[in-house]
Length: 621
Image (cartoon, rainbow, N blue to C red; front, side, top):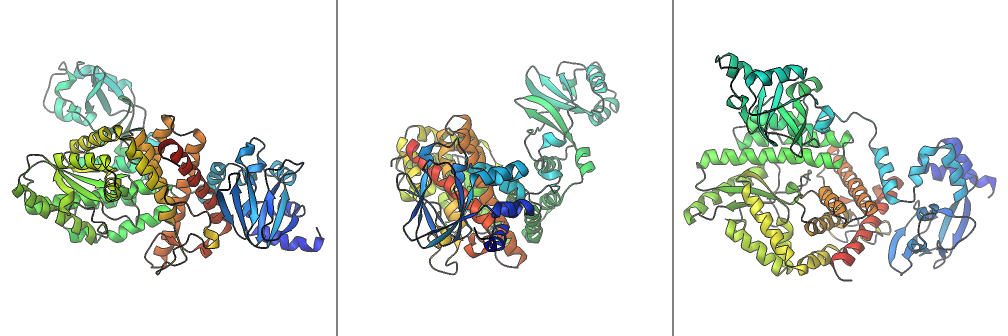
């Protein structure tokens, strides 16, 4: 290569990912070994060919198509795109190969594998950016985006901040014995009480003061006579934010951390005071005590500020979804209670059910309402009038708080979705037995349900009914599979091949339609197949992996893809909010940098591969 071309090559490489992360001396050395190749339209690069040297390819100008060995399109590439990662790993099977074909006159830069190996030795941290496995590159990309900034207490898991010091006693022990045990376990103000293997109670030093000393109770009595029965508990992986909201909601100071019915620690208010409560917790507390919907509506800017702070703080998208869900839960419960105070007590038992992203704990700034009411079977026609008014007040109240009404009318204020348990059971039976388009659409919404107010047992009844019917119908999973794989990820987006073709969002990529929804649909199929109790997308994939329905590679790949795409969308929405614009899911490809473009393509290929796997396992090709 002529020395005169070197400055141009260095400048070009320094502007694209991952070369922009390489130290300048190393980049110059790498650039000096670049080879230049020109391809006419129709010429190809056969990456399956064995040879003495392998290369990483960079499209300088022009465009390429990648085709798998069976002719199926793998991806389309434009300027600044890289390919050949797969063949940098000598352990990759040859049947994973593909050909790259020029679909117009194209100029390529070729970097020898040997030159990259020298770079990795000199700069080991660069290796992950060039990793042959998409999951490794995605993780590396997220590590770059999520710097080591402090993410704050509230997004930590309770097991990270709680104390392991807690006394464990039996219900038949005396008050004195329990007090002695609490003294032995230094710095604990609480004892968890078991009856054989079941947690039945809790006692604190404050309880001892109020219920024993102040009343002059005998210290020889069983602790069960003064303990708090059926205490609330939390799981080790729950967010501190969730634990804090529970403590405020029920005015409690101690929360045992329980895993498999075994106490492994204790979270106290002192943990929160020492680490400062955060804005989201204050908002949830304000929501709890709001006395009108208009007051609740005035909190909307705070909710947006919290979303912006989470995204700017590089908090993981899973946690952002959980935090925004907790806030939407708080709004919904408070509006239900305000409405009940206005209408009077409900005439029969009911459950307020949420569906969609709300049920999955994946709420974001564009989430609308998906809800239903499940009524006790003894409901009367007069009773239904009450719930019609209740549903209208709640749904319209949420809308005034900037939670939009569902455009598909999947809300409790639609009489169709405010029905007794028996009718809901009939719905599920009909939907599963005959999954035609409209019924498939209906059940797709209500396959994810979560009760947030009222009789929570109704949720379990419906979930049991749903699985009982699905077990008897292989046709149902097949129909879900066909529906979930009808839309392919946008492997060709950078040549304007899968962009919106009309309207105000013309020539943009709808990242929800062509990526996020596809992943959620795939998770739904796997979750139903293994009868997971979870609705969250990541938890469904985890359940499928644990049951052997997903390999470790596929599991890590799809989680990495999902996480990266969500992060990409949240950052796009943050930019819109900062510019005073309405956030949406439509992104202009011209705004993509090489960093986003490369890693989005990794994610899209992972989605396409899992779609193929789902077809093989659950559908027909």
